[in-house]
Amino acid sequence: MGLNKITGRKFLQEKSPGYMSARSANTALDSKTRGLIRTTLPKLPPAPGFDGAEEYEQQVKLWEVWIAHEKEDPQRVLYVYKQALMALRFYPPMWADAADWAFENNLSTEGNSFLDDGIKANPESCLLAFKKADRIEANPATAEGAEGNDPATQGAMVRAPFDKVLDALYDQIKQLKTREARDLAKLEESLALDASISAIISKAEDDEEVNESDRIAREADKANKTKAIQLGYASQAELISRLISFVWIALMRAMRRVQGKGGVKDVIGGSRQVFADARARGKLTSDVYVASALIEHHVYKDAAGTKIFERGAKLFPEDATFILEYLKHLLSIGDTTNARVAFETAVTRLVKKPELVEKSKPLYAYFHKVVPE
Image 1 (tube, one colour):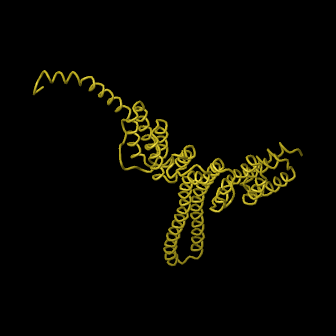
Image 2 (tube, one colour):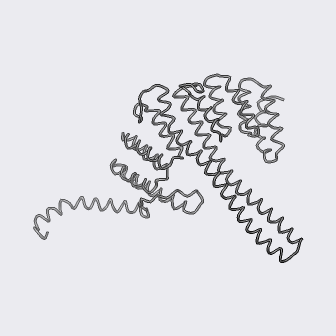
């Protein structure tokens, strides 16, 4: 307007509708994302129930609202996903959602990039590993390093994401052991210091009954604290072991689809090589044995399924869930005699331990329902 009022009014008339539209859109977006923290310094998601968990979930919801708001414009959605993943780098579901959206909109390069970057940031994420493996299995020719569609090559490509997540999970088990040893050492040092102070005080008081009582109390306190630390780490290790087991099961099923049954140490290892590898690395629950046995029995009609169950019964004699699956298998093949032996052996062992009595009830219920007295 200062240079030329006629030209100024013309530009104002041309730009005014776009400006009003942009202002309305900005106001609407501000109302939906108020409180959103846009940062390039990501935080680890707090565990549910711990400080900061609710605030973190609220930030995730705000990012999801913004993404949903931009769904009509692919370029804007891609931009918002990239912005969100700077703040939520350690939140695997956001990486998975971004990859799914990219693949649905024929943006394969971006989708694979989301998966690869997400796995680098979250190597222990089964969600991202499984999505990557499924993508390779469904589109082997487009996978990086693809040289053919033969079962050996395809199997190696599909297995790579599983191996990465398994390595990360086994490393977590090692870290747990290291932290447990460190915490027990710290406890030992702390209690030793307390004991030395108590010894000085006791020597001054020179009361044998009081000194003995203090010693017993300290020993009981040490035992309780040691047990608490060990149980805490054992609980974490059990959760990771279950996760490891389910990854092995998923890999076993994937290899069965890609390579079939295969054979141990064969070029085409198949599901059997995966089961052998899982047993070699350890930290397994009985679920892996059940899955392998059922694949052998139902898919390949192979007697190896029964042998795997027999081996599992020796390794997990107090696992009521495994014993129940074993009984179902034996009864499905008409082996009532061995089913009765397995049932009686398991129940006899379980009822000797009060904490396992409750777990034996489903065995009673199923066995007596299927097998007549």
